[in-house]
Structure formats: structure tokens, C-alpha cells
Image (tube, rainbow, N blue to C red; front, side, top):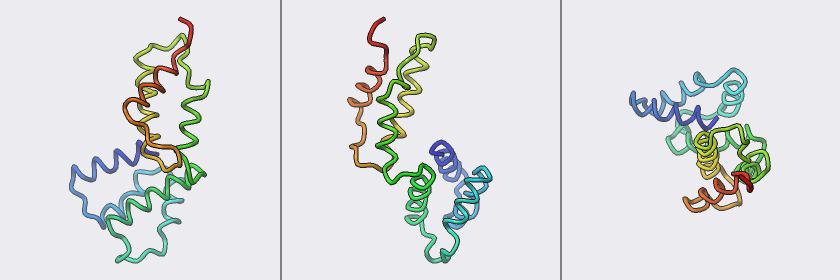
Length: 134
């Protein structure tokens, strides 16, 4: 979902969508289930309520509802620290590192009680994901 939001934001900026156009077009980049959830979420908002700040707020709420948690960062960080994110011996180290960096960057963008991951903590999580014995 964050990847879709990123692509939408990047392309909306590139083609200079106005704020009202963003509100109108966003659901078109979502799959049917997500689009239905988005439509349900924003139904009832007036034109005056559909501000730039409110769009960002609604996106945050959408991600929280979609993940089923008020603290999705905490859940993702637990996953990153779990054995499920340890590098399998069959996976190229660069590919594994790239996947872990994406997960860590997403974790920092989500709402949660855990602190954002800075560069040092991201590197630590990455290092810890490699098998202890090589």
C-alpha cells in the first residue's frame, strides 16, 4: 500500500495534479477492495474539508485501517526482528539487504509507539538479519 501511495504521490506531483484532482483520482490507483475502503472512508467529506492536510491525514488513517492496527510500525518492527526476516542462504546478500532497507524505510513512515529507525538503527537491523554463522 505504501508503494502505491508513493507512486501516486510522485506521479501526481510530476503531472501537477491539483488537490481536488488528487481526491478524485486516488481511488483509481487502488485495487477494488482498497478502492471500496477508501471510498467508504472519505464519503461524507465536504469539498471544503478536502484540503491538502486532510488528504495526508486520510492517507495515514487509511494505512492504519488497512493494517488493522493503530501502531503498524510496531508490528512491522517485530516482523523485521523475527526469524522470518533472517537472510536465507539461497538469497543473494545484496537482494536481501535491499529488501530489508525497504522494510525499514516503510517502518519509519508508519504510525507507532516505537521510535523511527535512523540510519544507524537501520544498519543494525540489517546486520542482525544475516545468519550468525557463515
